[in-house]
Length: 363
Image (cartoon, rainbow, N blue to C red):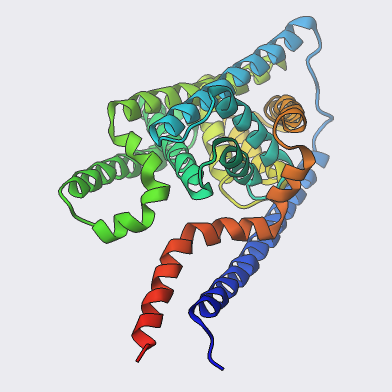
């Protein structure tokens, strides 16, 4: 007895989901391995240094409090930015949810591997707004594009204005700026060609995910890029305040160069909290700024505390009181849920292909 169309389509979906699940598991294992290697290197280096120091007076702890306040403002700005992107993608939501779920997502990045907080955001906002998951994913993509563009442009600017202050040299920064500019031009050209009716098939496939990115070629996109630059400038201020609290000399350009390195390393699949990769990047950046030994270890510990501890506590409270509790966290962690996202992103395309194959095979 032959298989019916529905059975054949189900077989295609199960097979594809199994491949996606194996790939996700491999990525998770690779991320943990990379983190362990980086962490081992950091621990080996730290054991050779003198014991770290902490702020020794009220003024020092006040600077740490100021660093926490600056980082809080950054997070609120990121939440508002997501609110604007969601609104332009026509996803009905409340602004407080955009901010609250952003905080929960940062908490998720601390306790889940491979930036699992992003997936947690997709699940929660999908349930709160009623939007499909791939539509919510389409609002996170422009966030990452804005971050990449802002980092590249700012890094190029401070390097060109004073390359010796970053100790990294101008070549990498100029290359990053060129890539960012070409990417922006390419997005604009594609948008214009789409307006003229080109790339219809391609656009049909990516439309649910790409809908939120249309904002980037509007005046709102320019405003969000400026906001994103301000956010990353504040990130450099946060690290500078942490260093000043410990009486460590670290200029803002040096701090920002370190932030760029840490952000780049965070793209590597890693264990929860970017353990190992984040720490290695910060130490490398501080060493380039001639902050070494116990001073570098102390700055790293304070910076990690400011970035991860308060927001993780607040995000956990929000998760428990407003966004589904630990059940939601476990849902984001399960491989089957990760596979379901990939399946949902490709469901229409696979179904169309399967229907086409079935029609071709019919007598």
